[in-house]
Amino acid sequence: MKQWYETLFENYGLKYDNESFTQGTIGECDFIENEINFSKQTRILDIGCGTGRHTIELTKRGYQVTGIDLSESLLNRAREKASKENLKIDFQRQDARTLKLQKEFDLVIMLCEGAFPLMETDEMNFQILQNASKALKEKGKFIFTTLNGLFPLFHSVKDFLAKSAKDDNATYDNNTFDLMTFRDFNTTCLEDDHGNKIELECNERYYVPSEITWLLKSLDYKQIDIYGAKLGAFSRNDKLTTEDFEMLVIAEN
Image 1 (cartoon, helix red, strand yellow):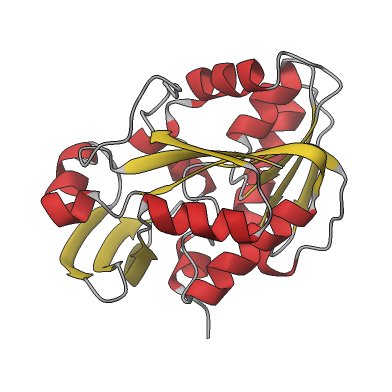
Image 2: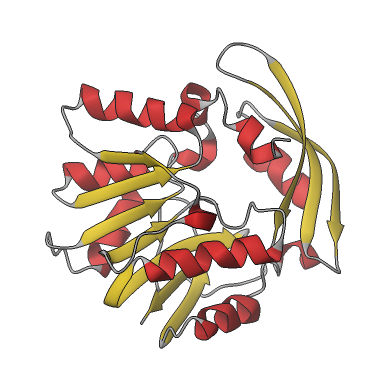
């Protein structure tokens, strides 16, 4: 049986690129470039690359980037976009839970809930962190965003999604946040690229900063920094607060 995130991205490549949460690519790539000191020798792995927005933008800027995703539909869209710009990019259909890449990359990025934290168990989410870490060379850097578990303790996730996604294709309903598992359960309704109406029972795992820090320490990261993640405007100056829906994590080994 397919999981909700597999069904969601089966025929969603075109509409995905128009969602509000995908509009921060340029600023996010500016931040990534700054974090690697604009070194064109940096080999980058983009986990959960989706339609390739960060992969393509970083490739245009002269970096060697490999993009992986579970969705063939999103990857096809990524390949189309890259082809239109005459870019040769290695896009691979891979499951981040079973990724076998070892010590090949200087930087791993996993942005906009790419893979982590969508999985149905904490163990699967941890597998993704493990495999991302194994793909890094020594002295590598791991940059990812994830849902901020402090946010739902102070705010309604349903209200936030309704407000931020008012011009988007998807709507969210029946939200319940489970304090024991820190998962938000909701019914997501959307129209796919073929015009089909889809209703999905979704759930996503929110993490508090201390959990992320502990998980990454267990993977032997020496430096772990966590900030608020502002769409298209990542910055080390943004201290994480309860107002941030997402957090930006930067880990170095």
